[in-house]
Image 1 (cartoon, rainbow, N blue to C red):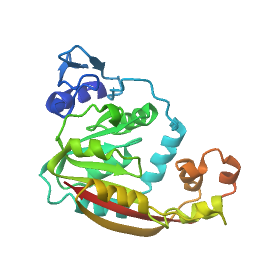
Image 2: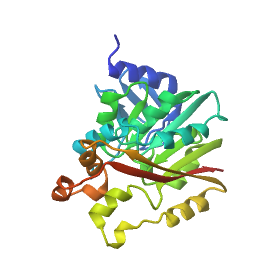
Image 3: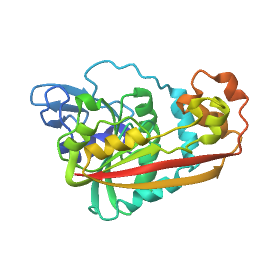
Length: 280
């Protein structure tokens, strides 16, 4: 029985070409089944949990272990199933074996569920600035290479990915264009006006934060990619009582508002997003 570290080492042996050194942009090779090394001698060890930290500088994350535990439980309830269906439809005309990068992957549940349901084979990797998120991803999901890293000092090689996912997370469009294969797709999920409206109503009733517009985000995406399709997904799901505080904890709305979280009364929640699909 292989350890998670050994499984990740084998994954990297097969797919090292997807990566580059974040210090000097040189190619990596695997040394002694545990270390990524470039020709200039920069090295990064696989952690025992199977992830690799490719940060070149310390980063302070706003997200803690509690948030990622809450997020996993909420996403396991499949509130985003309709979103996954639309994303998977966009993958049907891509290669039978596709390379997929999830940027801002958090604890990895979105990427795992898409990989699990995809008819094609995914060679998948997820990156996040938060070590806590990546540790949780490596703990829960194997056969995906999880990376602590910064897209501003990117550890990925140019033009290697058929799909770049960016789900409810900040984007780096110049980096996405560098990483994307010529016929690849960038799939970005952004909130629409009704996203989590029941939660917003209770946190921000009668304030301007109760309303939301994604128009600026959509325009920036259109400026970056010449070919864009937009799919709106709107669905209202039943939500169990025990998931309500967890949902609040995983969104910025709930940060530092423990008293309000205790008082929340919800039995359904609206998922309302635009799925932006861009290509070069």
